[in-house]
Image 1: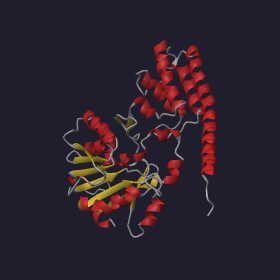
Image 2: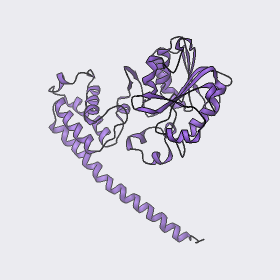
Image 3: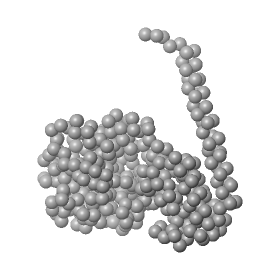
Image 4: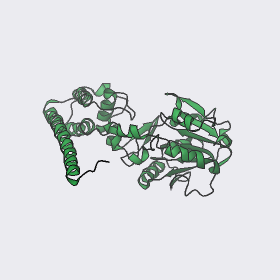
Length: 333
């Protein structure tokens, strides 16, 4: 084995620092140029239409990534402008030619600069996210809410839940902002919902959202490492949108996702670290006939390879039939 001397190690470390420094120097002029454009915009732009065109150009030039609700730069910039100006989010056209005050112009440009240059997700800039018609408070302590399970809740998870009227106890594991727990409480009016997360910061956000919906008597945020503090508690239904990003994907995340807490994203080499624990521990916390529903991202093939004898039922959602599975308690491995 080749012996590495202290001198060689030092040279290697110096080389790495030089590479990183060069990359930073390359990025700095680009950032400075973007900031100069925003300074110039303050003297030239006047109307909402001006800001819309300018914002779309800047966000597109930054090659921003859209994975938190908006489909493209136009939709996202329109939303940011309307929100910042306290205008109805569904009424852009009547205001396009409205002139802005200097303070309004500055406020919008600050938001657009953060989105384009710092690549901050829109939801963190506005501190709100929407699932359907429901609004939730969010900040960088939690993931921006996004879940295929949310699509299924208004219909009480039918047909996978045969008797939804009999559901009286629900667990939302890895609750984050508490959005799914709240949607579940609204859809199942006779149920008590436990909202579990490891992160105390996330639970503070969840508690705020629970209070906003006045559900404190029915939705209980619990700080726990998965089932550790639930003791012998059992549920009719357990749902989870856990961390499921595998190691290679974590390294390739767009800049927007790096503003989100890594704890809520990373799930080991194959993205199944948390799912394995859910499958192993859920039987002890489900009532007879209870259901486990879990969202797993793009990991269906890996999951089926790891559990070839488990009869997963794959739920069809808007993106297809490979993102959410459901199992009866008696089917769990």
